[in-house]
Image (cartoon, rainbow, N blue to C red; front, top):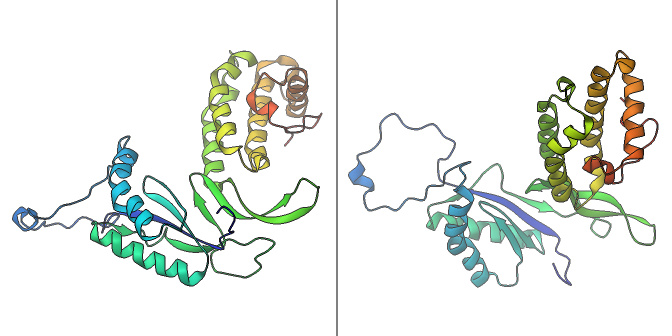
Length: 270
């Protein structure tokens, strides 16, 4: 980070020891645990990130700042990234973090904790892990273009496959093709806030990765138009052209029409 380009990153997640395992049928008497502090997070609860931040600010953030002041890191709730210069340094820091968490009654998630090689044009080594997901983004080597028009490989983020899948599921759940009682302006008012949120968050980096799910949205609009207008019924291709014409005539009607997707006579076609 800063002037120094760091080669490795540790992507990890905290969890309570035994989290995800089956509960024992018979619990030990409470008296055996009355003097032992326990850390419990409300998994998937609204309060969970807040509780995690309060506890991990002292258990992890301040400890990292004291023990490894030269090492940049990011953390959100129980997900964190630590940047390192060498593999040996990354493995050493990983072991130290595991020991620190054990002192605090936590452990590293065995499946979501890994050392990642940040591969790009200047770093052509190979490593078992060369990508990781963090906060809905996938960080991996990607083909990029600099301001001079030259292409190069850059280790950069884009919306993750998991996030794209969630967006597709959400769009399908809207059942646009069943809303033939609505005008296209009504639909845009109903769903634009959600679409705009996706674009503002996931579109900050490598925005073109959002094109496929947004084209799916245009296909859903074409199916809606096919059912709504008699002249388009049974003519999905004609409905697709109709949506493309609306997008060129009024690009501000839908948020994703302003994101730079090429709008032409075949825009959104299957």
